[in-house]
Amino acid sequence: MRPCLGSFLASFLTLLKLANGVARFEPASVSDTSLVIKMIKADNVSSFDMIAFIYDLDRLVEFRKTEVKGSQRDQLFSFDGLLPNTWFVFRIHYRLIFNQPNSLNNDLETKQELVVRTKNSSKENPEKVNDTVAFIEETFLGTSDVYIAVKSVFPDAKKVITVIVPEMRCGRGVIKPLAQQVATSARFHFEVSQLGLKTKDCSQICIFPFLRVQIRNGTTETFRAKEWCGTVQEANKLGTSDDSTKYSLIPVLLLLIAAGARL
Image (cartoon, rainbow, N blue to C red; front, side, top):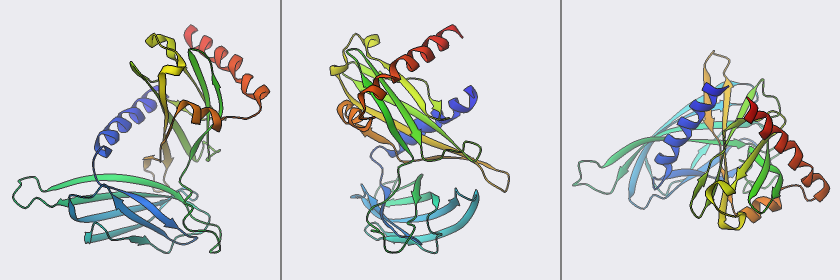
């Protein structure tokens, strides 16, 4: 799995650079049969062209392709005719046209992926968007160590492989444990002492999920899902509230770390 994880990390770094400061899309609402998106960070954008490839992750098929030209930045766009209670990926290739008529570089081509689950019923609130595919299940905060366990909403790795790229941002740098594929869960150890710091000196934890699937036409696709970033305290609150369960995570992680060191 090392080459696979390396390709995930390379994709992650490229997409992160593109995302910073560039206009992008976010879900506005989702029903049982449609997704509505809007553009954000678009103050200097006059219009955009878009091609969206839609993938059904439950059935592992390319569902549809939609093309739109000349849309305005403040325009809402709806993908209709979706299936209820289904995870979809929207891979959006788009060209931004900027409000810079005298500039040689007045447009930019980029892409983004949205992973969203449709509602089970039309009676559910469309403003509550389910786009979280990975979540923190357990945490432990030590004086100079932080341990987290991350789970995926896709339990069957034979259909959808979930890989987590973790980060912890501290006063003197960023701690980046190796990316892991989620089996039952992915367990990470942030060794804060390697920076000569304490846990209290660290401000943020991020988990970046990537999905790899084999589409039925024979192609293998990799998608970036929505990341989670929060303070160390917020991550701790998301972990198991039962202290006896939480503390049981420590010996398991230490055994895994020790085993990895011997390999």
